[in-house]
Length: 427
Image (tube, rainbow, N blue to C red):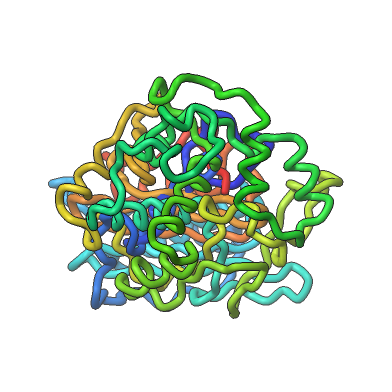
């Protein structure tokens, strides 16, 4: 769900929800857009709130008045009163975690839509964050990569239980690790972004391009960590290998295949897979401490090639997303995708490139300067998207998780999104 190389551990990916509407750890939960099965975001949402645009300091807001949920506990109407309550909790997290800027979108059919942007897009010019600004999505990219793979599964061109060695040579345990285990984060392969040499190479020259083969070399110099399928462990290495499978089988560059088979069919006109450091405007500047000096720096123009299939994509909050509903996949393949296995984290499971956190399905994402979260709650068909321009943690917690938890505590107290910090994403 996130692209954090130094503190990855067992992390979950960024709903890599990506896609519609999920990196948890090392790249985990992402936004939902077209890859996995999340129902498309409300096609014609009813805006009952003013556009989100201003950055109001938390202390200027009057204490929010709690808005009770309907007696049935169903998803509430996104009324102006509830919007004010959400404004309060979002800005509280923003102030406590010292997040420069954040964009939050929440919607559900027949319930209205909440869209807000707070804070600064550029700390030098004081330019405010706007709702239409692009942000790097980090590990939400994994949801797109796995969706691309599953499209090939539906076409009968690959099988989920094929060994990775059939497509990529030189992989440790390549004759035993299956594509399913790679997509489900159960391969046992070392996470290349945890390699000290990789970290040094990246922060010493953040603009340098990395090839997929270079990334794999950082992983393969380490022994495998456990037998294939033995347990869950988030690893960006898995997504890089799946990206290579998609390219080999389709005969098309991964960025082009995802654009053709996932992004455009999902109607995501503002979602891109960059091939270099290019960054469509308007976009917010991103701030990180994952630097050679350990000091906060502007990572806006860092080349995301180091994350490639695990976390390079860019999007904005207004793009429709369709990850959790399986719009792009056959019912059988979608069912395979959503069959989650225990992750070892309370209330959290991981399917194929997608998380299930207390009922919210999707992925998060994180890489230097940015974090994202896109999740979908099937019952009310609610979609939550959070984009922010820092990856600096607060008291050991990912900022994207803090926003997700604060918002869901208000609107779905029976389904509170709370991804443990060790599930943070990478990529």
